[in-house]
Amino acid sequence: MTEVTLRVVLVAAAALVATGVHGALSQQSIVMIMMGLELVVNGLVLATGGIWWAEGRPGNASVLVVVLVTVMAVEMATGFAVALALYRARRVDLADDAAELAR
Amino acid sequence: MADPATLLPLLLLAPALVVVAGLAAAAGAVTTGGRPGTPAVETLRLLTKQRRRTPADDPLLARIGLTVLPVAAVLALAVVPLGLPGTGAPVDLDVGLVWFNAMEVLAWFAVWTAGWGPNAATALVGGYRVLPLGLAYELPHMLAITTPAIAAGSLDPATVADAQHGLWYAVWMPVAFLLYLVSTAAMAFWGPFAAPLGRDLAGGAAAEHAGLDRLLLRAGRWMLLVAAAAMAVPLFLGGGAPPPITGPDPFGGPPWLWVGIKLLVVLALLLGLRRLMPVLRMERFATLAWTVLIPLAVAQALVVTVVVLL
Amino acid sequence: MTLLVLVAALGLVAVVAGIGVFVADSMARATFLLLASFVAVAVVLLAFGLTYLGVVVVLMMTIEMMIMVVFMVMLMMNPAGLEPMTMVHNRRGSRVIALGVFAVLAAGALLVPWPTSAPAPTTARGTDLMGPQMLTMAVLGLTLLAAIVGTVALSVSRGPARGGGR
Image (spheres, rainbow over the protein chains, first blue to last red):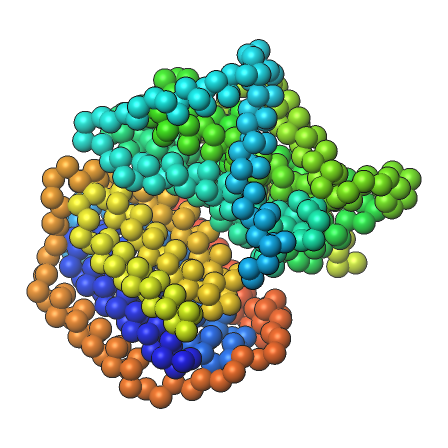
């Protein structure tokens, strides 16, 4: 039963990661790209929780979840700061228009 | 799990919170010069009125948000040790403080969706005002609720209440207590922090809601205020223990009675705060919070940590 | 058994909400469908016994979504969903890549012989987080500080008009 539950959880996590990857690759707006990346990290959090539960609750996995949550926060903050700076410099909010590195 | 002694407090929690919030609203009406029956009359009136639709609105999201507000208040109260016979809190959660924090930030979601839903300019501005309010009070609030947890060594409100034998935390961490009181009013966007529903916006986020929607917003606000005031009792005022004036536990009385008395004191302080201060502008409060309140909260936490380690 | 049903249902809710983020026409609904996905995962964590982390995920994600709502109106052309929103590029390529990723990960989930064992009698979560992983926590703290400094540096307006709450 533990194993079946773990596999169900991991398949759900895989679906979340795949959805997030699809969103991050296909969306044009920076806000939506970041939502896709957040979904990927969400899938990782779910997978980590499932593996932690199934393997007898070792201590280290909760640290991994804390790291993932920190990654989400930092990614969102930095991503929005970059989006804001990009808009102020070039008045664009789509990833397609931000492709040039030169000013 | 299905033990009647634990189920009964859970089932009665929502009605009890509604009743106490109604009484608090009646007291609030009296302090602003109205009549004590006004909240009850207003509740009955809103229950009979029709809900309002506006062009191109998003009623689904708005109503979800508005329903979340009173539900979040009840869930936040569920981890507060109320001194009931048999159990401590209705739900004994070892991370009760973090749960309380999580339930209270759902109020930001509620106010924003209430402002967003009607597709009206003033409602939208009111809804967006809750965001600088939330970001400003949240850090001092988190530090203020972590400070008693540091002193008691636990995130469980019942443990924090029990760790105050002889000396309440409100006495030797007064800055944290005052910050918690301020953040109680802020989390319920009430009193000096009522800018999201401000009169300069003709009601703000509540402007375009009528009937049951308006009742959920206004009643939910009072319920959240009462739940947050109830959390101040185990955090800073010793929970169900009588005041240790001449040594520990000189007075008798059941714990729930003392919790009730302390809750009344906290609510009286909050109503006094509303009388004293005008409605603050959100940019001024944000500046005040980030330049004054956060350093105070950090300094208080530092002092408490040093005391605990010594 | 009930745990399996609960976890399967919550996983389904999380995935459906995640797909709904990119299908919804209104940006407000997309933002809160993402929040719903996170809350579903947090409830799974609660069911598995990671109470602190589950509650922290709910807390942080609610605040993050409320912040995202600010940028949503600032940077999106169609926040209210009054017109159908299809701002995509490279749709077929990303679909192929996403399906490939799902195939690989699901195959790994179903075929790898995951080791499972009974839960340890008591685990002190506080010491788990802080004891042997103090270096990790210190690095996380520094990362957050660097993120704060960098984000403020990126967002400070360089023009002559420095507005604010003076």
